Image (cartoon, rainbow, N blue to C red; front, side, top):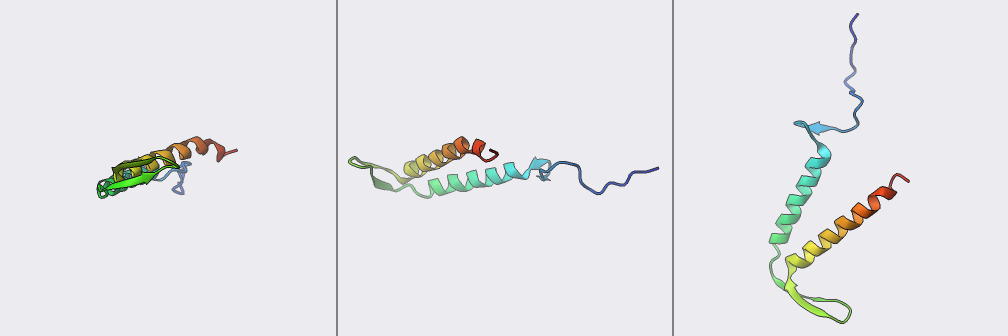
Length: 81
């Protein structure tokens, strides 16, 4: 007797060339973010409440990206609860 598979392997993660699509998506976002950072090299004035700093725009964008990534990492555990 032969067993016929319906194509489902029990895994919920799809893959492209053996790489999970989640990692491919993360890689694409990282590449686009780096490209965006290097496309914005002009100096800008950044005003905090009372402090004004002049810095390249890419530094401000990178700091924002890192803060968002850290916030997402900190909040990811709350999704399942």
